[in-house]
Image 1 (cartoon, one colour):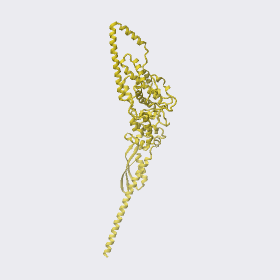
Image 2 (cartoon, rainbow, N blue to C red; image 1 turned 45 degrees about the vertical axis):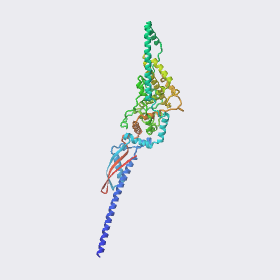
Image 3 (cartoon, one colour; image 1 turned 120 degrees about the horizontal axis):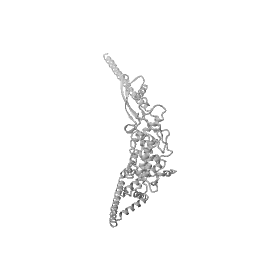
Image 4 (cartoon, rainbow, N blue to C red; image 1 turned 135 degrees about the horizontal axis):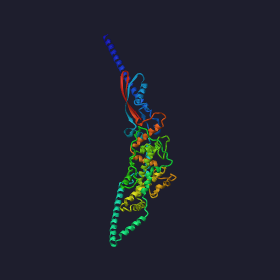
Length: 496
C-alpha cells in the first residue's frame, strides 16, 4: 500500500517536471521564433527600401543607388521607413522600440570605389577589352613619341652646330682683319654687304603668323559650324566633384621662343597607356553612356559635351570644348614633333628659314631651326584637330604622305576637311578623349556622377532634386524589438 503511494508521488513529480520542461521548451521556441521573425522582418524591411533606388539613373546609366533622405523627405527618413515597415510586418505582438542607422556606404566613398565596382560588375568586360584593344593596336601602345633620349640628341645637335658656327665666325673674323690691314678698304666692303642684306627678301617668321591665330583663339577657329554646344551653365551646388580643378595637362606655349619649354611640351602627354588598360571599364563606360562633340546619343542632357566635361571640369560646353581641344593638340604635338625631326626635307626647310631669321645672330640658328620645327608640328596638330572635330580620323604616326601642312596652312584649314570619312585610318575624336581620360585620374568618376545628378534633376518632373553625395549603396540598421517582455537587439546590413 505504501509502495503504491510512492509510485503515485513519483509519477506526479515526473509529470510536473515534464510539464515544466515542455513549457520552457515552448517558451524558448516562442522566443526563438520571435527573434527569427524580427530578424527576418528587419532584413525584409531593409531590402524593401533598397527597391526605392533612383529609377532615372538606373534606367539611363545602369547604376543602383539609394537616397538615404528618401527622395528629399529629410534626415532620419530611412530609419522611419524601416520602422514603419517593421511595425506592419510584425503586428501587435511586437513592439519596435528603436531603429537607428548604423553606418552607410556612399556611392562616392573611398574615391568612388563602389561606383567603380558597379561599373565593373554591370558593364561587359568584353566590350571594354575590345574598345581599349582597338586603341592599343592603332597606337602600338606607344605613348612616349618624344622621349628623353630624343631630347638629349636635340640638345647635343644644337651644341655641336653652335660650336661649328662659332668656329666659322672666328675664322671669318680673322680673315677680315687681315684683309683690312692689307688694303684698308674694310669700311666700304661692310657698307656694300649691308646694302646687299637690305636687298635680300626676308621671309616672315612663321611664329609671328601663328600668333595671329592663337590670339584669335585656336579652338574658335576649329569649331565646326554645326557644333551643338549647350547654352547651359552649371550652377548646381553639392555636386560630387565639388567642381574640383580641371585637367592636369598644361596647354602648349605657342610662342616657340624657348627650347626648354618646347621640349617639356613635347613630353607633357606621355605615359597614358598603362592607365588606359587599368581603367578600361571606366573609360569605356564613359564613352558609351555620355555625349561628346562628335557623338550625341541623348537629346535631354544638361550639357551636350559630356565627355569633354569629364575631362575638363569647366562649367559650360564652350569652356570644356576649348580645354579639350588644347589637350588633343598636346597629344598630337608629341607625335608630330617626333616625325618632323626624322624628315630631312622638312628639317632642311626649317634650317634655311632659321638662317634667314637669325642672320643677325648666326649662333642662334640651330636653336631657331628646332623651334621652327616645333612651330610646324603645332600647325600640323591644329590641322589634325580640325579634322578630328569634323568626325574624321587622323593617322597616329605621320609619314611624308600623310603630313598635311606647311607654315601657311592655318589660312586655309577648310581645304583639309575632306568629304568622306570612309576608309580612313587612325584614331577618331572620341578615341582621343578616351586617351585623355587615362591621364585624368580619379576625377573622371566624380564628374560622371556630376552628370548623372545634373541630368536626373534636369529631367525631373517634380520639385525633388537628388544629391548623389547623399546616395548610398549599402547600410546597416540597429533595432530594438520587444516581444513578450523580452528585448531583442538586432543588427542587419543590406546593400546592392
